[in-house]
Image: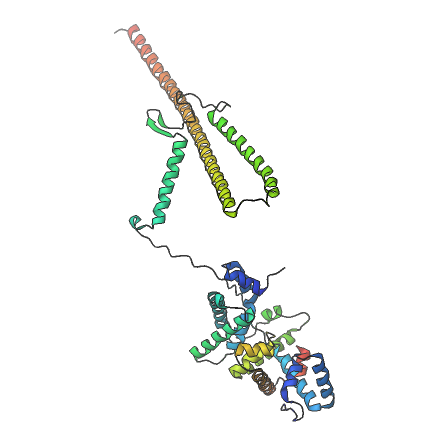
Length: 197
Length: 258
């Protein structure tokens, strides 16, 4: 039976480095994905990911289990992303691929997906990234935590230190702006895309 | 088309809760009842689902992350021996003591003379330095090893039988302090026995080394002697041949006087 996060945290606090590295293995991809979606740069997201685990390791004794370990990690990550954006005075960026390598693309196809569909998916992904980059930081964080990490409204409220109603407002406003942006970009009706993707 | 919520539709809260499935069964049924009657909320819900579908296409690039936390190794700073840490000197002293103890136990004797380098231990007979090394059952260390083996077997047998006795007497066990003292005594005895075994093992190894060195020395000596012998034979034959030639010339010259 696999160790739970809480068990691994307890063992890590007791000095078991291997247990902490099991937590790292378990959470490094979600943390990297969160950082990437917030700041939009692969290398910086990687750095934030590493720094998140380093900070978590150093502060592990201060983690009292009042929240889930993953929520604690998300909070550290979001703080680091915020620091990164303030330090660099940057808005989130969208890394556009330089040219499209069809051979490389073909390797990314899922199941019976055609190359045309794959190119469409990549383009849609780029458009969503651009639309997300326009959103205010609070709305973007709420949407990312809800859509890609499956947190509940209450967990997001706890993580972002704001009331539940504020979370819902940010989500709703963010989704509204996204829909408008994607419409302007020519993506069209959302449900058609949903069926296609 | 702009998204709007009807004034009579309780705002966005119920819609969002339904959209993300954070509702109870009753709440779901109630809202589905409302959706059946409210075209604006149905459209709104479809639009939001469409946006969620588009969001699903945004995936971060694959990265080999491999983040691992490792402990810092303390930096090694070169320093003169007189500033070495106390524990380092202690370790060095301990190493010297162990070597000296090993040499003492093995009754080690290192000698350099006309026979070459000789390493001997007290386990060999000192009266016969050039005698072949015997490996028969009469070697004294074999008797010691046998005695040690018998003692260890007896200890193992007594500890096995003692375990059941201890279980039986668990309820009338002495106070924890007394038990700890007994355990400590037992551990100390085991440590002493282990050290004794290691000393004997060292002596045994030393004996093997001495035997091998001695055997190699003798082999080399025999080979050198054989080499010299062959050289003498070659040179002796040459000298005899030259002498024979001289004699022949002398005889020839005497037969033909001027």
